[in-house]
Length: 120
Image 1 (cartoon, rainbow, N blue to C red):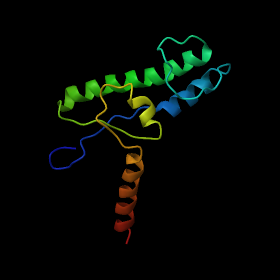
Image 2 (cartoon, rainbow, N blue to C red; image 1 turned 180 degrees about the vertical axis):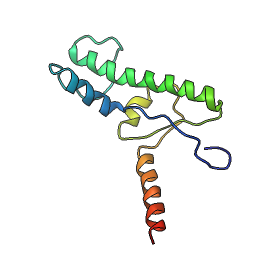
Image 3 (cartoon, one colour; image 1 turned 90 degrees about the vertical axis):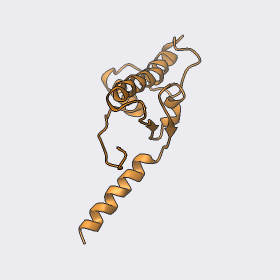
Image 4 (cartoon, rainbow, N blue to C red; image 1 turned 120 degrees about the vertical axis):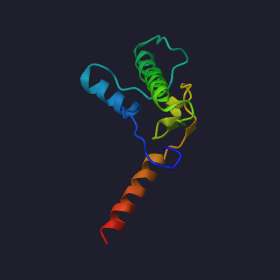
């Protein structure tokens, strides 16, 4: 948002859950794992390797995307992680300013209220 509260735009990418689902669908022999970080980025077995790639890979994607957005918008923009797994990934990101797991739902409610209000 700008100083007047106008929406400037955003970037949308897959979240941790969606990324893991896509990986498991694409590679039939991979086992499903708990979406949690490993003690080391280097996985010592198949489970840790998958977990590491998913969690640390997501954190890296977020940090790089955030870096590019801040280059366009300026350093004053704030980054808010949202979604059910926001806390899982955010602790490994250097670019997250705040976590609000319900922000997306709040936004959908605002849209619903606006649409419903216009329909009357």
